Length: 89
Image (tube, rainbow, N blue to C red):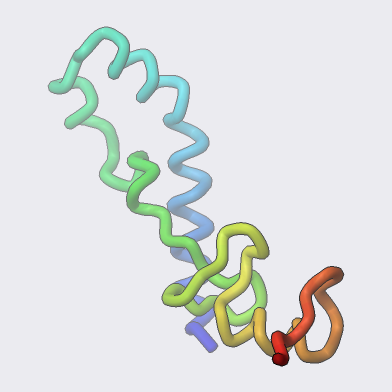
């Protein structure tokens, strides 16, 4: 389980990215790299980390489901994800 401070920090970064998204796209279209450099660091979308919605884990993240591999496995075994079954042959 990730610390709640890490989760909150990531949410704050996401809000900053959304706030400056339009301005960033305008500056990129004008090729004004000096203007881009003056924006806050966290305005860049690459600063946001994909985290598991349930545990906050950042490694082993499945984009399609929004959870980590460990959470995905537990949910699949309990039948919480429709259409996903454990492979057996």
